[in-house]
Image (tube, rainbow, N blue to C red):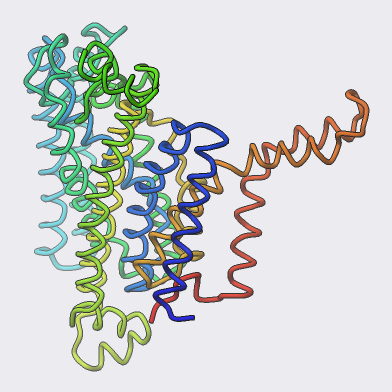
Length: 445
C-alpha cells in the first residue's frame, strides 16, 4: 500500500466515523465534532511546528490559546459606555509606566558593571516602579469595574456598534483571528527571550508556569475580560439562526429539503463555520508545508536532530528556536480566537493547561510528530474520540451489566466510572500507536 492510499484511507476512516455519529446522534453533534476537529487540527499544527520541526517542548499551549480568545473579545465586543472615561486613561498610563520600569531595569543591567551596586539599583528600580504602577492601576481598575458590573464591568472592545447593534459587525471576528495570532506571537517572543536557553524539561516547566500566569490574569483582571463572570454574546461572522428562521426564502428552501426551519438554521450556521474554519486550516497547512520543505525547514530539522553539529556549521540555534516558537504559538493563538468565535463567549475558567495541552500533544504524537498531515489527522481523530468515548463507554457498561439488578453495586460502579474513561482511553490509544507505529499514523518522511 502506497503512502497516498494509506493516508487517504486514514482520513476517510475518520470522516466516516463523524458521518456515523451524524446518523446515530444527530447532524448537529456531527458538525460540532467537525468544527472542533478543525480547530484542534490547527492547534496540533502549531505544536507540531515547535516540536516536530525544532524539538521544542512547549507545555503552555493553553496560554496562547487563551490569548487568542482575549483578542476575540477585544476586537469583537463594543466598548462599555462610560468605562474608558472612568478609568481607561489611568490604566493605559499604569501599563506604560510598568513597561518603562522593565525597560529601565534592562538598561541598568546592560550599562552598569556587574556587582552588588548594579543588583541594588535594579532592585530599587523594580520595587519603586511596581508600587507606582499599582498606585495608578488599582483605583482606575476599580472605577472601570464599577460601571454596570452586573452586565459589563470591563472596558469592552473595538466593535463600533452600540450594545444593540454590535452584532451587525460580526465580520470583525475574522479580523480577531490574525490578531489573536499576533497576541500569542508577542507573548511567545517575551517567553522565548527568557526561556529558550533552557533544556527541554526546564522549558516545559517554564512554559507551563507562564501559561498558568496568563490564564490567572484572564480570570482575575475583570476590567479586561470580566474574569470568571465571562464575556458572552460575542458577534459572529455567520448569520444568526433567528434571522434565518424569519427569512421566507430560507424557510421555503428548508421545507423543500424536508427540514424543520429551526433545525435547518442551526445546521446551516455550523456548515458555514466549517467552511470558514476549513479555509483557515487549508491556508495554514499550505504555509507549514512550504516551510517544512524550504531550506529554513531543513535547517530546523538539522538543529532538532543535532544542535551541536548545526551550531558548528554556523547556524544560530537560539534565533531559529525563537522563530519557530513564535510561529507555532501564533497558530495556537489563531485557533484560540476561532474557538471563542465558535462558542460566542470567553470563559477563562475552562482553559485548563495540563488537561487540554495533554490532549493536543496526544494529537501530535498519534498523528505523527514532524508530519503536518499527521498533525491534522491526529487533531480530527483524537477530538472525535475525546467526545465519543464517554457515551460509547456508557453504552458498553450498560450492555455488560444488562443482566444485573438495577441496584447492584458493581453495575452502579461501572456505569459511574464510564465518565472517567476519556483520559484512560487517550493513554491506551497513545500506547498502542507507539507500540505498533512508533512514529505516528502518518510519520515524517
